[in-house]
Image (cartoon, rainbow, N blue to C red; front, side):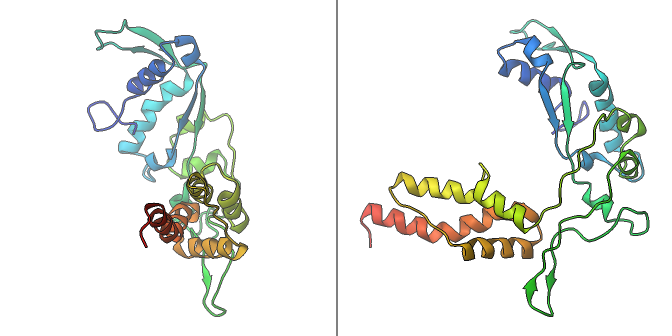
Length: 239
């Protein structure tokens, strides 16, 4: 949502004002907040110029610690100074299109998503994206300005997506679509049970869709839709 002044989107000041409001205007608590910039890679450009670079430049002051004047245009709130130097800032991104764009630059190993072994007609367990160790030089190749990369204190590289991780998401995650469906059925005193074959079938379909874990919610929701309808009809006494 972050954008430059005058463009569609949200400014840093607006986000900070929303944070302060959520904490009942406790500016000291807000000063020590944890901030997440998701999909930071979406701003990058291989040319190192353009709108992405301008947004990155807007972030530089925020990352190194900058004072902002909040509520300047809000007559109901007294303007206040906000300093970002004590905030914990986390940025996330897949950088997938950069990792797979140039095969000869040392940053390409396989295509995004999962592939199917057509000869044997079985799903092959290939990870999402297999990167080399991601470091500052990789981030620069991905289009992030040197000044921004220099302010990154720690780079944590997550494991690629695979069947075991998908299974954990389905069975253990708080956001699991399956567990949420079970909770809905339980409210109507109905127990929803699934087999191991069901779990494997969901994973297989997600792999074929080549969107990683994003497709799990859709697949599970579609698979229980008829059972939810039948449950509703029974509650209403309709055959």
